[in-house]
Structure formats: structure tokens, C-alpha cells
Image 1 (cartoon, each protein chain N blue to C red):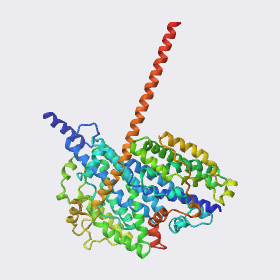
Image 2 (image 1 turned 90 degrees about the vertical axis):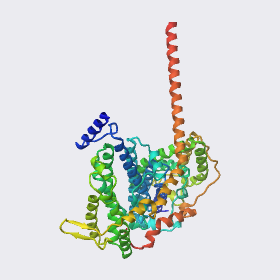
Image 3 (image 1 turned 90 degrees about the horizontal axis):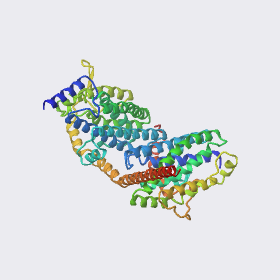
Image 4 (image 1 turned 180 degrees about the vertical axis):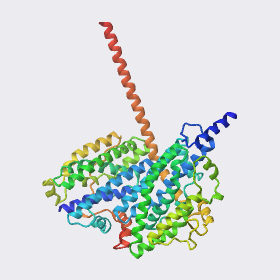
Length: 246
Length: 336
């Protein structure tokens, strides 16, 4: 895998999750949360655009070609980002797991030997620290709220558990980039991630789901059906009017 | 009786003197009620207005447009929030205001009962609907009620950015492919008259106007504001190379204004009364989102209560520990 592929993979992660969060606009349980979700979505879309921009300078396509003119199998995002999350508990559970990861990963990325990635890591780590605090609050409120919210949050954690393992996988070609200090070692983050996440789940009076399930394939373009449906909506207009400027 | 008259006279004198009325000041009940009605309906309009544009966030045709639209719709939610807060200073709670919306006792701007069918509608809404909103809202920055006036200052700044992004979409479509240009013209055709109607019924049929003028909640008549909008928008349509859908539109040299053909007030009244293309859906969506979120709001309240109880326990424990320490010291002092 080249640096270009790695950058596109990271950009796809941010775009797909940013899009998922943007689906919440106007649908949150109260207005303040509507604004907060939109903030996170905007951070992620901004992150995606910076990464696609970098990909273009590395010889790739432009941001809109990446976003709107590829089919699902060409997307390289990890599966956890594309899950629908259309139930509030599911959205919160996924968000917390990925925010903790992003916080760790981006902090390491800030020390990358690649200047552009280091700069992006430093800026985005700050955002992810804030996202993590916010989704961590939701873990507590829903886990330790009412009996109903507790049950919904527990079910949501079970629903997403197993998709998170892909976060810690180093792709076949990525090893070289990790060895040369361009990309953080994903596998090395697992222990810290587990410690933080398990503790937060328990302190929210929830149970850590049992391990054993593992779903992966995003970096190889092996996606769930959800991604194609999401893209059908997202890409419809530019594909209907090829060559148009918007 | 004489005292009440005196209060009312002093209140009116302050208004005539361009002083701001603040939440703790005395005000006539009718003034309070009028403001709660107007501000809460304004808040509802912002929130319901998130729906037609919100439906295009997931379909925006470029990442740049998607980002701008999402932050625009987010701003509208923010405006809703300032406005609910301004209404709360008059003693209305957000729950009550939302219940009034759901119970159809409170209205929202009728323009949002029209659908956003194509991407060009996002341009037309920003250009026309936000222009009309700005023209309506600029005088509200000098409204006699302080919290409303101050909310308006902030809102107007953001609205002008919204208006520019809408117009920018129209420019890109009007100078684009033939399909894009047709899309832009179609959107103008559908949004023109509803936008003209946004200023409310003509002056001779406006029910709340006279008193609101005296109280300086309102400063210009519906027709004056409408004229300002028309003069501005017709010129902007020309720059776009689009045609305003009014065969009777003409420039009136003597007055220096554009004159439109007859405005279809039956259509306006029909939509206000509930029979626009999206009335049912807008309200139903708002109700459903509110109901879907009930379990979350309950969890937030339950968690906050538990946290408060834990904190109180903690404080009590510390106080007990402090007392124990104190009595230990006292008894040790005695021993010495």
C-alpha cells in the first residue's frame, strides 16, 4: 500500500462517519444536541476534505471525484464507520468507540515523519478529544440514566462490538509506512484503547460485551450493504449530471 | 386602577423614548403575550425551516456544498435556541412552546410548507427566503424588547451569510449546464410567490399590526417590507439571467419601485390554514423526532438527578468527616 492509499483510507473513514452524523441534523433528541452532532460532523467532513486534498497532491483525484464518483467496493473506510447508527444509542455507542480510537491515533499521528499528516494529526487530535468527552458523557447518561436507556445502550454496545477490532489492524502494505514512522502502529493502541473503553463502560454501569466476534474488510473494499445505500443517496445528483459544476 | 394606568403610561413613555424593555421590567400582559407569540413562532420557524434544507444535506452535490449547508442548517438550530431563550425570559417554557406547536396553537412561517424538490431549491431558499427573513428581521434589531432585539443582531449577521451562500448556488446553476439553468429557473418559479407572501397579508388585512407598531415590536408595515424585497430580488434575478414568474411585473418610474401583479392571497390563506404540500409532514416530523427523543431526555434528567444526589452525599460525607475531625481536635485539646 502506498502513502496515497493510506491517506484515502483515512479520508474515507472521516467522510463516511461525517456523512452518517450529518444524517442526524434536525433529528436529535433536543436542539442543543442537534448543534453538537452537527459540530462533530463538520469536524469530520473538514478532516476528510483535508485528507482528500493531500491525496490529490500525491497524484490522486480531487475530493469530489473521491466522494461522489466511486462505487462502494472502491471505498476503503473501515466498516465501523459505515454502520447506520440511526438509533440514538447506536450512534452514541459507535461514536464513543471511534472517538477514543481517533483521539489515540491522531495524537500519535501528530508525531508522524510526514509533515502534512503530523499537522493534521495535531489539529484533529484536539477535535477528537472534545468528541470523546462528548460521546463519553452520553455513555454515562444513557448507561446510568433510566432502565430503558441502560438497556438500549447495552444493546447498542453489543451491536457494534466486534467491528472495532478492525481499528487495530495494520494493512498489508501499511507495515512499511508504520516502520518508517509515517503512520502510527494501530495494533500498539489496542491495549490503551481497551483499558480506557472498558473502564468507561463499567463506570457507566454497563457490561463490556464479550469478545469473540470480529467483522472486518473495509480496507480491502469488502463492505456491508449499508455503504451502497448511503452512497446511492449521497452520490445521486453529481452522477445524474456528469461534468456539471456545483 | 389609576396605578395600572400610570404603569402603562410610563411603559409607553419608555417605548416612545426608544428605551429597551428588559425581562424584569413591568410590562402589560398583552405586550408579554404578543411577544411570546411572535418570538416562539419565530423560533418554531427556524426549527421547522431546518427540514426542507436538511433533506438536502445528505444529497448535496459536492463536499464544499455539503459542509456549507450543514453549517447553515446548524445555524438555524442555533437561532431557534436563542429565540426560545428570549421567549423564556418572558416566562414561557420550551416544553410549553413545543406543545403549542404540536397542538397547532402556535404557527411557524408558512413558507416552509413548500417542498425542496431539487438542489436549486436550496439556492432559492437561501437567496429569496433568507433575503425576505433579513428584511423582516433588520428592524427587529431595534425591537423594544431587549432580549429579542439582541438575539436579532446575532441572527441577522448569520442570515446574511446564508443569503450569500444561496445566491452563490444560484449563480453556479444559472451559469452552468442547460439542465442546471432549467433547475434554477424552476426553483425561482416555485419560490417567488411564497417568498413575496412571507411578509404577511397586505396592510389593510393585517390583524396584529397597529398595536405592534405602537409598542415598537414592529417598525415597518408588511407592504413596505415586501416592496423592499421585490425591488432587491428583481434586480438580482436579472443578474442571474432568470425570469421572475410574474407577467405583470413592471418598473414604475414615478415611484421608483417595481410593481407586481396581483398576489394570490387565497393560496396563502389555504397554506397557512394547513393545506400546503408539506404542512402535515413538517409537523408530523417534528412530533415524531420529539417523541423518538423522549427516552433520551428522560435518561438525561435521571442521570442529572443521580449525579446531584451523589454530590449531595459527597458533601454530607465531607461535612461529617469535617465535624468528626473538629470534635476530635476539641477533645484532644481538652485532654491536653
